[in-house]
Amino acid sequence: MAENTTSPDDVQENNNDDTRKRPGKKPLIILAIVVGVMVIVALVWWLLTRNEESTDDAFTDGDVVTIAPKVAGYVTELRVKDNQRVKKGDLLVVIDPRDATAQRDQAQAQLGLATAQLHQAQAQLELSKVQYPAQRDEAQAQVLKAQADLANAEAAYRRQRGVDPRATTQQNIDSANAQLRSAQAQLASARAQLEVAEQVQLQIRQQETNVEARQQQVAQAKAQLETEELNLSWTEVRAPFDGFVTKRNVQDGTLVQAGTALFSLVSPDIWVVANFKESQLERMRPGNKVSIKVDAWPDLQLEGHIDSIQQGSGSKFAAFPSENATGNFVKIVQRVPVKIVIDKGLDVNKPLPLGLSVEPKVTLE
Image (cartoon, rainbow, N blue to C red):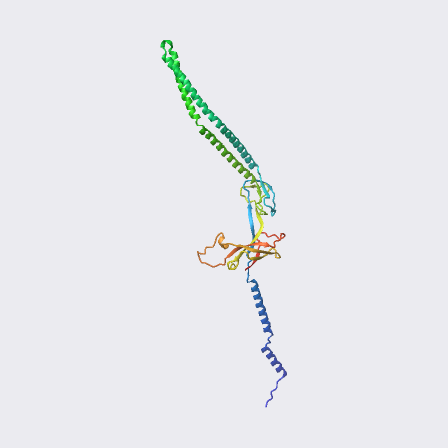
């Protein structure tokens, strides 16, 4: 009968096999702890960010005005430099004013002439109020005199015709007849002059219309003078508001035309335009608080609020808006511009030029 014997090497090999077949619980516990931590972190992150919306499609914006003259001429003075800050009303550019000054002086002379003619017409009107009634009275007196002369001529004529022909001559008769006809003609002329002289109110009204015409000429001359003075004032280009001079393309001696862009003026009032996805707008309202990070200044922390939400997506106001009713339609998530006003955090030593990339984070209510 054979004996069962086991060597030490066999025993060691069996122990190693048992160890490989039955791993310990420690790795499973570590894995469970890692998964639990990840779940907790994800839950905390969700709780902290579920009331926030952010986007990296945002940039700084502000008011920009193109400065252009309203008159043509040579630039005689340029009083600003690139990126210089100016105040409202500051003189920026002076255009040669000599042409405008000459036209202004000519308009002043025309106004002086029109004013003198008006004064003359007014004096003539006052004179006519005395002169025309006097002429009427004089005409009435001339009629009475003509009537008396006619009566004398008729009496003389009758005497010559009533006497014995031997007591007078034919010459006397003809003379009396001529005097009679002359007196009749003078009476007719006096009556005609009286008809004209009696139109006193009409004659005065004629002088009044002359005064009114002169007054309109004075008004026209004043308007022309104001126009020329305005043209003269336009030879001085001034700042419409506080801001920074940018994109200057004018030098001393440059010949500029009306409407030529000299430079742009950027307002120091800066805001943020953030293009949020349409799916992010559900709980977004004007007044929501916003924290803003600026790529150019990583350590600059800005705070603001939503001012308004544009009533239209960005593509709707593009130069070539999409026509979804034509061709094959592919749904694309639209972005809507949101204006964010900066409330605090600005630093004068860290300027915010227009167009800087920012990342706003909106706290939803």
